[in-house]
Image (cartoon, rainbow, N blue to C red; front, side):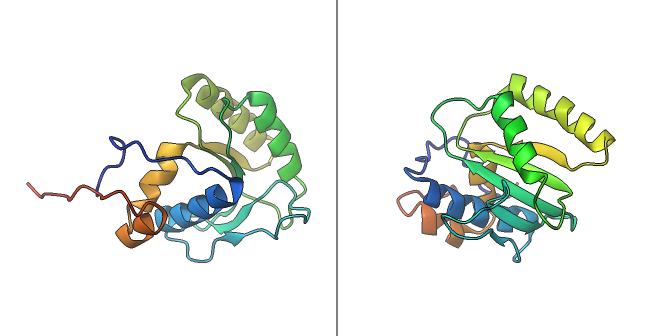
Length: 158
């Protein structure tokens, strides 16, 4: 599969484009054509922008956060609280962000997720910008629809 980690892909300038990119990427990554946007702008979304099944059939929600600043654990906890009212209930919640990987936050979210699952609630994880753009490379046509000026490196078998 082509590798986009060496590319400087531009981050979306608005939340609508970020949600569309995330939806397309996760459809590819999870092989889940039934993922869909949750409602429309102005409607209550119970902390979920995208919902459907992931690669193993769990009901998942994705909350998209296009932020220039780093995500905080406080924000993650607030989004978890919002998503607890989503119906039907979720098996997992992903917070998708345009941020770069953050090992401290990743550890905090892993520990928080373990506590949440121990109380029979959904698991929680973060999808960082590199995770999202990697998902787009599964289908070069989908990748090009969002990044027409970028060409994926060709994969050369050994």
